[in-house]
Length: 185
Ligand SMILES: [Cu+2]
Image (cartoon, rainbow, N blue to C red; front, side, top):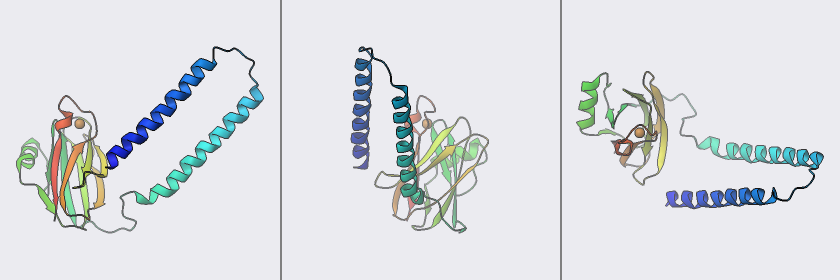
């Protein structure tokens, strides 16, 4: 699972950081003169090394952002409203609490596989994180659900199945229960 791989990478990086901190903490006990000239040289080298790593990462991953390259018009629009503690997902605009309630209990929206879908995402109370997970449980796309704003997220959903909307913003006590459903057929 990709999540487990992420966990292992996190543990490795965290262990490396703890090691560095432990080394620095123990080395400060031995007082010695600092060669500032050398220290600045090391700092400069570290800065450019970090810059190179970040630029390389950006170069190889920027093309994978889930946004279309051309000005293709989306064939399906899905309206999403986040509110403590659920997501209203509907093919029709959700303009008030009544429509939000109706969308929460309605049959899930379905969109055709391979279509370019535009999600129009907002919130009726606090900030929520709209995130879309594939049937295999992988994060496909995400944006903020913010009160007073409509964020448009265009994404092509290739694999048919049940997609889950989860909240990625700690928004309150029942944050973990926030979810919505979308069918791709
Ligand atoms: Cu939340």
